[in-house]
Length: 264
Image 1: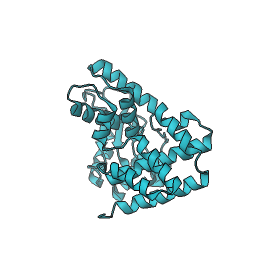
Image 2 (image 1 turned 90 degrees about the vertical axis):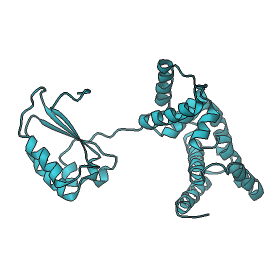
Image 3 (image 1 turned 45 degrees about the vertical axis):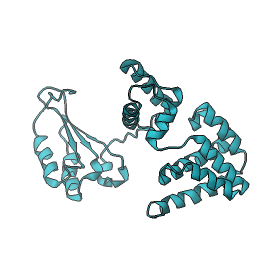
Image 4 (image 1 turned 180 degrees about the horizontal axis):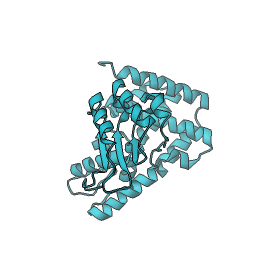
């Protein structure tokens, strides 16, 4: 299967093959029994990208599938798949990978590939990947190319990501709590080399962690941040009540939406 030499496992990318004819080809093929395996398996990736006509064509096969045929429908947007299709499937929801799992895999790769990376650098990559191993590997490749054979440091990772250190968000939050506009502007100005939308989203992420910390009794397993960040979060979470934190997150989310269409 891995070498694509088994004809009984067929993968189709619905993002680029989403028409009625593409599904009709599958419908015609399911009549043939498997030649090498027990089942013929059709994997349709990004199935939500199929057109309405293609879904209708697929539905007939899903209603009366041959006993030797299995369909695996993969999607990141199940709400876009018609209910008539969903009702005929078993649903398996995959959760995002934990940060510790991503970090362990990065360390394992470091041992196998022979590159050195700081623990904080691995943590920053894992946080940026947001639960996706594929994104973690992509970011890691970019960071290693930027490091040019030197040990991968936390600072280099931040430069590649265009991100700011967590202390920036703690300083900004402290300035807002104090009502010190001059200090807040100074913190933002120092981080002005970073992309504004990313800076704002990372600040919302920091506020979210403050809210979780304040609401969960310092449950570290929910926060999934490194020890240095955890100390800052614990300290800042005690500065405002939960209601105020929720209000700040709401305001920043609204601002984030406006930033996307703003020229300023």
